[in-house]
Image (cartoon, one colour):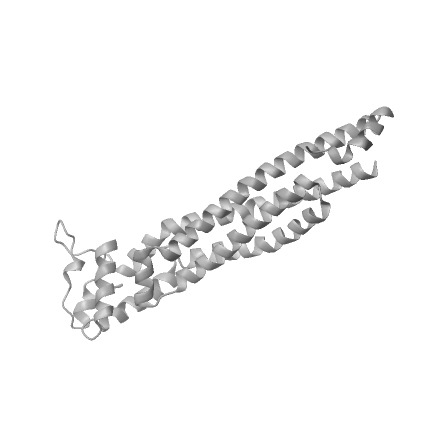
Length: 253
């Protein structure tokens, strides 16, 4: 499999009693196996994360909420992660092919692409956290303004009332940052969806915080895998550089 490209040279090295050449060859083959296994695993992990992005984009409940409230921020963040994961999967597959074919040009190309993808992957992880975790003041403020707008249009806009009812019932929340007081202050009747279906008590937390919390599992998965790639890519780059040097030494031997 590996090392066949250098087989003729290797025989000559052995005939001349060159033990150093054999050591370089063994190191090269071992590194090829390690990088190929990691490349295949990276490709599968990236495709899995890409699939999660697709699922988030087309999840029926979330899809309807996004369209009704016209809040596309989280979708836009997942697009960045989606593109980064697709390109990472492609680059990992290309790296595996380059290592298998022992093509130093393809390996160099994947190194350059990996450095560029490192920046894109890190950017995706950062923005998905900014607009996808409960502790984000940017996200909660944006959702607070959004939900207060829906409540203010409650009596005039049936679609605003409908989507607000859906969200409150599905994730278990009431109003925006002011909770049920948001309805009082705007002269609206508190809807039954603000009450717990078993206890009958009003939910004690607003939808701006609850929806942000509801997004966190998706965000944790997307950001976690993205950060995994940003943490491992430097080691992959260094290993590929080392592999190219070893392959060059074998050719020059």
